[in-house]
Image (cartoon, rainbow, N blue to C red; front, top):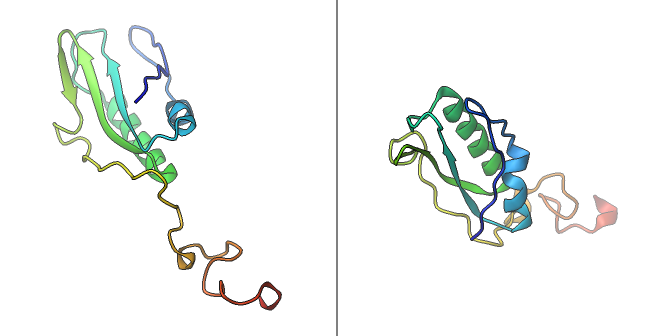
Length: 124
């Protein structure tokens, strides 16, 4: 388990891009991440931008095989969990070592994979 601070925002905004969020997770070979940020206003209610960003990060994570387990917003001694409020569906972490193409049929167009995988290379 690790911790990585992606951004330090201003009083009203923070710039966050999926590549920075997932960089440390990829380097650490993580199978899932937990997103946490604070609202300096003290109100932990997720903003429209929070909801949009969480959707983008979930989609990016699905693409690269890293699950977004939850997004927690902290404010003035309270917190709101996207999973607990139904804004994010809880996911099981992907086991380490899961192949993107578990069978050769699942990787059309990749040499040695697909329907002709058992034919000699000179016949392909």
